[in-house]
Image 1: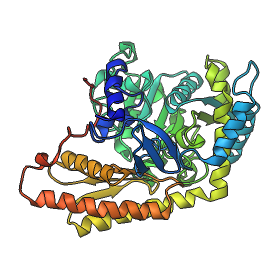
Image 2 (image 1 turned 90 degrees about the vertical axis):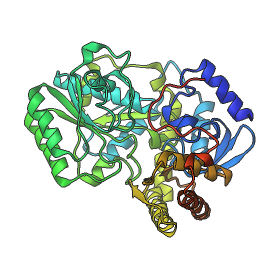
Image 3 (image 1 turned 60 degrees about the horizontal axis):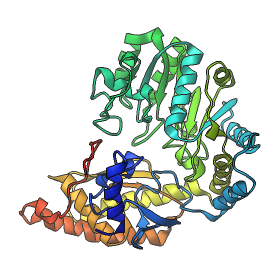
Image 4 (image 1 turned 45 degrees about the horizontal axis):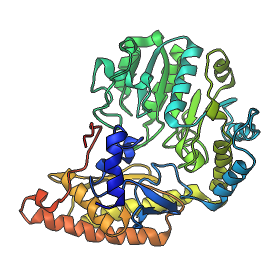
Amino acid sequence: MNKTQTLYKRAKEIIPGGTQLLSKRPEMFAPNLWPAYYSKAKGCKVWDLDGNEYKDMSYMGIGSCIVGYSDSKINEAVIDAVNRGNMSTLNAPEEVELAELLCQLHPWAGGVRYARSGGESMAVAVRIARAYTQKDIILFCGYHGWHDWYLAANLSDDKALDGHLLPGLSPRGVPRGLSGTAYPFAYNDTEGFLDLVNRYGNKIAAVVMEPIRSEYPSKEFIETISTKCKEYNFLLVVDEITAGWRLNIGGAHMVLGIKPDIAVFGKAISNGFPMGAIIGKKEIMSVAQDTFISSTYWTDRLGFAASIATIEAIKEYNIIEYLNNIGKKVQNGWLELAKKHNLNIDVGGLYPLSHFTLNEPQSEILMTIFIKEMLKRGFLASSGFYASYAQKEEDINEYLNSIDKVFNILKDIITSNSDISSYLDTPIKHNGFKRLTK
């Protein structure tokens, strides 16, 4: 037990679940091996509490740091905001500057509100949609956070959310009275969407969807949603928290031809500093004055300063093109190396949000071994790759060279005809929400 693992063991005794974010639990990667804590991070490098250095070829701050960890120019903007006072009885003028910038990037929008995380930003968007339409039911596809409006879908069917990122999400603690207020449909499932519209029709307040995640939307899917929104007068809310700022400067909906009423941003908008933004048509966003939406730390100056600096960096460094180029290189590398070592994998996702699936017997054990072996070679690596400007060409080459060696190890294990679990000296990685014990 080193410092990192010792601290995490203590955390599980006093912090229910061990961490604040499920996606950062070491158990989701390699239990007892994945470094739970970092001492510092710079570029794409991370140092744990024991001084071990890793290159992050996994999630780069769960998709938030597309410019890179501790980027100098963004840090300068934030430090300047700190020195000038991040909080006051008065408001920071940067919130107006950012609002104008977001509306310039999205000419269809005429109003902006802020929060400080993706999940609460989505809750704000849903509140506004319900206030504007004065209806209750939300149809949604994709993952949209932890709040009651979303988990309410699991009140009537505890597996309703299983296909929307993680299985096993419990609605315990969500009021039973919210049952029947949120219903999921699958991405690109036009018929499933139409079935819900036919059942709930004029009771629907809004359709909430990620514009894109693992695959591009079909023309029929998008056109049908747009047509039904107009026909029944319910709103279209796009969750850009994951996809935003990766296909273009702003929302992916602009590239895909989706015309929303509200769009929500988080993660990459501020390169790792807490921030969320809700933009929408002027007449819709004005309803935020008719319902109570207010919070002290939504006025903190740092998120605004970081967001403005991040947008400037995206433009200056031509980051969008870079993310897509290295993401394509990684996807092609995975496929070529899997073919070389006779491994059966599926590769998918946008280039900047790539992932692969290992289609072999006992794949979860093999993936745990993969993560363990990549850690030994100095990489935070998993089945996902979130591209960042800080991951340079030499980093990608070194990463793929290491995967070449690890895929060869997996091939040898598979062809050895021995018990695969005997190669694992740690518990198997989790694949979904599980209650943690000590």
